Length: 456
Image (tube, rainbow, N blue to C red; front, top):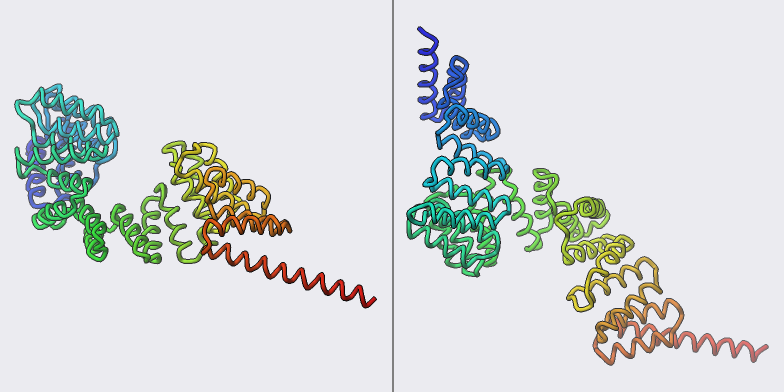
């Protein structure tokens, strides 16, 4: 038998194995065929499809690239290469592949849809919108897949109402277009229409019980509806299908924390950390759960590691809320000095009118007092009172500072001022009682000294 006939037989066997889901046998047969005749672009393409089915996207991409070189005018290998790049997170490369397809034929709906997706995944939403409008010009009618892709971009930008419109329009054109119902449900959740979103997701899951994005989104809807146990059932289903699904573990950690089940949250965030060692907040969440479990010493290394990562990474810049939250955790873990350092970096960046300014100053005062920097803490409490004259916590802090400095008259002044503001404040009332007893004690001490002096 001639070599080319052997190669054809291997290729035919590969097709048969592929049809029966025997991916390893199909791969072996195709490689044997290509070893005989490596210039068959169709065989390279089929090998790519086979590798794609078993999740070997990098190898599949290599086969699609080779097929594209050999089949200069073929559309399918180029679309497959772009799709592989999307799965691999190589979004700029994906854009380039889809643009090559559209140079060959501007009427390919799928290429336009995936180009919008690629731009959106690359966080270039202006380019995604431009591609969307270019598709409208190039195609005879609005294409349902392109509308679905645009809906995803709009959802990412928080433009939920427009996203819902795009998803609805896509379903009008093609009720079975992939992804439309999921995007519609996502938009409805974002606009507070959870009940309708739940109905759509249940319909999606009846038709496809293993739809992982639908299960994850439905778990969010159920959690927001205070149906935590049902939300966890959705997550368990996801983890049955994909035990390493990091999104499911993240949600499990969040739901457990919200429900006060801190040991479960600790386990879930630990799994997130194991699956994604560089996850931006897993370490912080582990520290939170440890603090909630009254284990401050165990939380400290995680907080310090998170701080180091914050300082190393210039982007994304932590928000003031994130800085303040970390400072609160540092103080709770017994690190007042680090807490104060954090706040001293944050506070100068906040305008006096910023909603977090007073809260940050109050926390800084507490951290300084805890670090035995009494005068500095008192100075910060006075700043708080200049911004918020009715702040009882600052009056209490100043009274305590005066007591520690043996300035009892000043302490009495701050206590009286605070109790005029709120006569029922327990901290100030306790401090007043302490001052009264100390005054009584001083009185009897002085009387004892006088009596002793008269006897002499």
